[in-house]
Length: 301
Image (cartoon, rainbow, N blue to C red):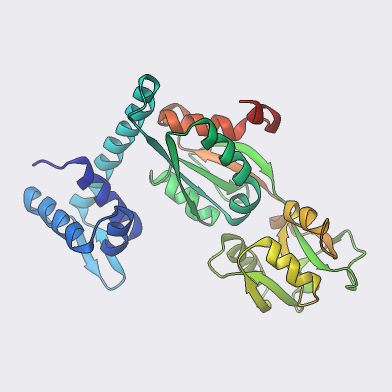
């Protein structure tokens, strides 16, 4: 029984994606080639590794055992790349990263750009996920680092404060609530909203808490980023919910007002979480250290 690293990486991608087609795409293979490799692995083992169902595939008991060992082997290879990369330029490492909408749009671009400039042979696989999904992925070994809200349970993970990330209501300057410092979501739940697309992690959070109040927010328009939300709000299309950092930045060039949300879920700190910093591959450990460095120190590194 001989599985090479390409086999192991493909199998990991297929299980993570829950689909042979998506796993093949992540592995930069054709579907036919990926199917052939998986069949070859099953033939060599003498047991099925995946069960097919209407929504995709799931690992069998044998598949879950292989998945565990594949993660261990690939993490060890990544650790080796990072450590041997100290001695030459031939090896390239990557870091698997998950975060929510706010971290992706507001806090990570500048931090990541500095890190990647300082480490040209490291690449980052960055995926937007809601905080509960990122926590689950960390526990399952599907990513190295996750940026999550402190509102979710992170039991069993090592977590460090990354950035303050309160959510605020943005509205046109002439809005009836424009003079208020703080409002509850319930006070505006019947208003017309400008929102992010439904696949946004932040949008899912807002929808979840509106439903908990028995409300379904009415969206006049959905857009892809915070600047577009604020731009639509400026023109009176509705109110919106964005991170305070985005609201402050956009208010410098747009005629919008903002008020803090008094709801407990809107007052949050983003946490940088890992399973164990000591067990991280070298490149991921470097990124974690970079994330946690004070901004002035990170810029100077």
